[in-house]
Amino acid sequence: MNTKITELLGIKYPIIQGGMAWIAESTLASAVSNAGGLGLIAGGSAPIDYLREQIRKTKENVNGKPFGVNVMLMSPNAEDLAKLVIEEKVPVVTTGAGNPGKFIESWKEARIKVIPVVPSVALAKRMERMGADAVVAEGTESGGHIGENTTMCLVPQVVDGVDIPVIAAGGIADGRGIAASIMLGAEGVQVGTRFLAAEECQIHPTYKELIVKAKDTDSIVTGRTTGHPCRNVKTKFSKQLASGEKNGSITPEEFEEITLGSLRKAVQDGNLDEGSFLCGAIAGMITEVKTCKEIIEEMFSQAESLLNE
Image (tube, rainbow, N blue to C red; front, top):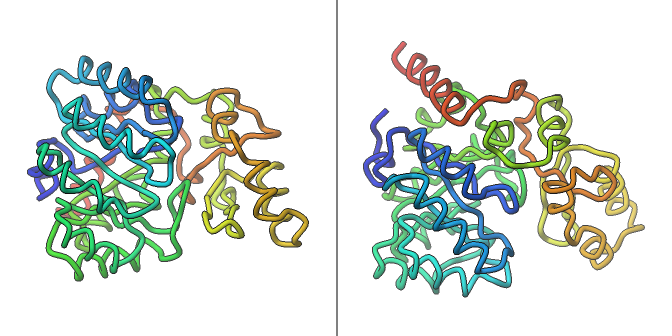
């Protein structure tokens, strides 16, 4: 499937793996890139030395194939990571949770492709003016930090609002989601939750099992009172958080304190009592663990079949 995104990034399939903090590391990123997509290493709040190591491991594993790094702009390491991707000659950078404007010029001078994740038409237009190569229009169905607009509504409005290629994200787990995104005007997709159930994804088995066993109603949004809403798997812990926010028994400050380190506890320890198991609303569609290659080829085989009908 050749699109403006496959041409821009030099990949076989127009799919980017989501930059999921504590999850998207060299093993997963390499598997996605080797399968013909664009694998991402998540910067999150990780130490710079660790991220440098992850970048170099990925370079070794992909044999010249493109890969990228996601910079979460609200993280304390954002400035250092912005410099690191230049030093390490990373081909592609995606950004989330903020405006990467102050970094774009230096990234472009280093010939890095810049693809910000945006929740609105206004930010997409601003990113285009600042020199972004493409944007990811991410709907509220996605896992982790979310905006309010849905993928179905956001993507066509962003497509109409900018001239650069648009990548759809949020609620995409099979070929039907890809085909729908293309029909909405997107040139590619970003997929996160589906790759949680990839063999190469290094999350704790408990996390993987939660995704595979999830039903359509098993995601919940917490953190709205903090201004940083996040979509999680519905667990006893996440339900307590949401309830506490709703009835006022947990203040925004207490919420931040309770959830500090909770994603790491989910990813590394599978801790159901204190872990935040981030996932998209699409988790109920995921029923099997497969390799990244199998996931990507299956999705695009279905999408191409639908688009060619």
